[in-house]
Image (cartoon, rainbow over all chains, first blue to last red; front, side, top):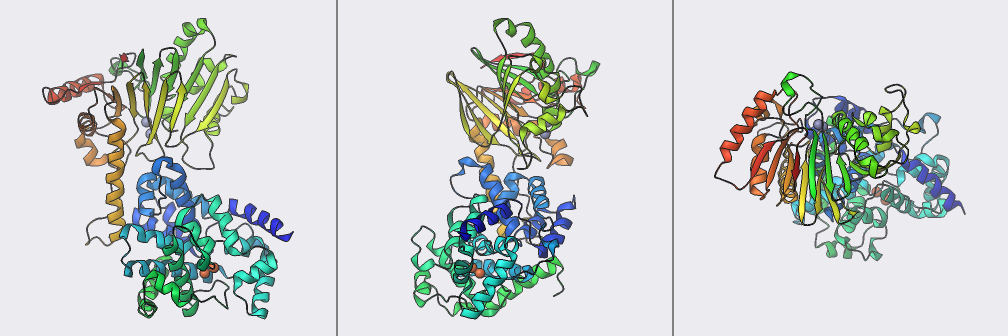
Length: 289
Length: 305
Ligand SMILES: [Fe+2]
Ligand SMILES: [Fe+2]
Ligand SMILES: [Zn+2]
Ligand SMILES: [Zn+2]
């Protein structure tokens, strides 16, 4: 059964999963600076799905009694203290121990980073436009930022297999998650579930990770977040902002917009603000491309 | 009987010498007794004399069996452990509970590091006592014999727990090292780092955490609270250091109906004369305005809850 062997390798990778190469320099710079402001710390963490997930794990496992899941980074920084969060970020911001093998990767992590950020920002902007309570908007962002997190272990722990998976998707014109299921017996939603479990993420974030390609059959409590992420994911793929390996993306049907009580045309108006947010992030990270 | 004995009340570093005779110079260590049960809070340098007392008195009744609750792993709260004599005595049973800040470090490693040849002639592996370590978070625990403890995260540069022990309807609460939670994000839109979401969320988080703290203190028979600074010192240069002012502690204790407040974690630079002066100052300030009784924690003193 290749699936169980693949899942084992994913599990193994997730334990020491490093932050993304795109953000690592800035994370080190911000967290090694004793005078770093809380807002800079907040900014750098929210740009990296791995860091974001780990900080949320820490805060949620630290506070048992809370009942609800904390999804706000600002709250995490206040409750855990800036030093704790900095230290956690530093320990996560290591260079990928697998990357020095020089293996070819199916997905370029820069493109993946941009895709993840785009989905996070888009989901947040849709939520705002829908009049979601400001307190809950951050959850949409986190869910969007993290939705494809399962691709990181697939891409890095199963590099050769994942290249073959992409080729299969290409050949058969399949959405990537279906090709993954066929080639690896494990799609990035299942791999993402492993990540979410390891980070003790539940609720809307975990559901967005697990169901953003199967939202039509989703019956849980977080339908709004799951569907918003699916729409944001479609938008990112359609606009070609970043690239997370999906050449033939699944397209949400009109009923999804109905369930969200939103107009599909809102997406056109999102192009400018999303681009502005991503540009801001690029300036912050000092990216030149 | 439910009692508290102070074996160390000094903050940051032991301060022996003629200026610290009255209030003591040992770092944090509290002995709590709930009838026969022994609970120790923190293993600062004060734990050495507590250990000696246990070896003189308690050992006659049988091996030492105790729970040690560590507020956090800053050095002044664990440094006395290698000199706690019962750890060398076979038959001793210790359960050490405390928070850890980073998930890679374990409590036994942090404690054990002190008992390594580099720092100490005896290694952790060579101790006579049977020691169990337990990493704890915000939780409630039943310690048996009617004694319970509830924990609450405090605001300190590393994770730090406050403890609320309850026994036969009485309560002893510890809240150090801590300062009030505050919004660390700029709230002035003119600030170049201003971010509306962070500012709003920060305000709310700080307010909610402070309310939780007050609930944690509510109605305590004894509250042992961090008061390393005066409000003036705090505002001038100590914000963010993780310690409270006398003013905050007195206000919080009064507002939550605490019966007795022990001012604790004395600044290492504070002499007996200064502490005495401050004690009288704050006692005078609340006289007639509150039912709260307050005093500076004194090494060696026992309080009945
Ligand atoms: Fe996906
Ligand atoms: Fe995606
Ligand atoms: Zn201390
Ligand atoms: Zn401390």
